[in-house]
Amino acid sequence: MKTLSRRSFIRSGFAGFAGLTVVGKGSFNIDLRPEVTVDKVKLGNSGLNVSRVALGTGSVGGSKSSNQTRLGMDKFANMAHHAYDRGITFFDMADSYGSHPYVGHAIKTMPREKITLLTKIWTHEDGSERNAPVSESLDRYRKEMGTDYIDVVLMHCLMQPGWSNNRKHYMDGLLKAKQDGVVKAVGVSCHNWEAMVEAVDNPWVDVIMARINPFQTNMDNTPDMVSELLGKAKKRGIGVIGMKIFGEGKHVSDPEREESIKYALSSGNTHCMTLGMESIAHVDDAVERVMRPA
Image (cartoon, rainbow, N blue to C red):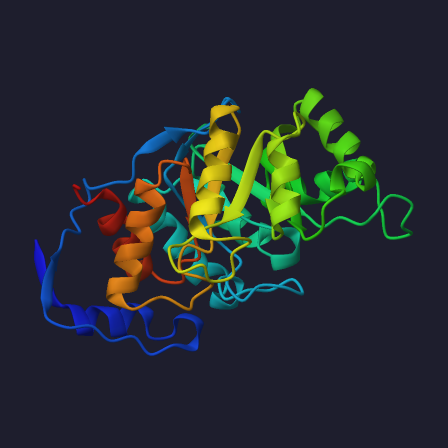
């Protein structure tokens, strides 16, 4: 076991995270033994078993780039390989992050059946001139990732209710892809309370990605309200993935990270979480915290 100054570790691993300076007090032991790996969980009734932590690729993401893609292909691949060795076999992408080719490059040497690939498709209302055939988008995504199928595809960043009535183009296209074996599970990424309530009540949804942290930062309601709703989703067999665990980079001090991880794990209303890791230090810190005995 390696003993590090917590201040030194955090500064080396997290000082650049979301442009924040992170400090901590005291010292601590971080168990970085290779045998300490993230466990796997059943993602609702989706039929998928996923690592409890997903490697998020959308930190400060948009316009086809993110902090993860800005690492460059090789540096990102090195981090992804390290994450894989630590049991993180779940990769969270989106077309708008531009991360498909980066993950595709990283997973070339990984057994496809041992990893889970999730991506998100940006949507528009039915009748929009910007609506391309869903099959064409999925064909491009698969080519960029270098895979025959995608495990999970979510409609990205739903910000208004009524999506189940005005996104039929995407819902029908994704359902057909699921029936054809191109996609294994479908669902939504929510950034609105009413949209999330709608998702929980919709039988089309296999997976929900929802914002949850104990600080109510960049969330869609209070932590208790969100947790209660996600508990309802879990009871209905929907796979629940927590996101914005650190409040989109606003809560990354040592005590805040510890509280956020514990909250996501102890609420009992998420199956797993996605974390926007940007370095090997981030990966090791996440594994240590998630797998630390209660």
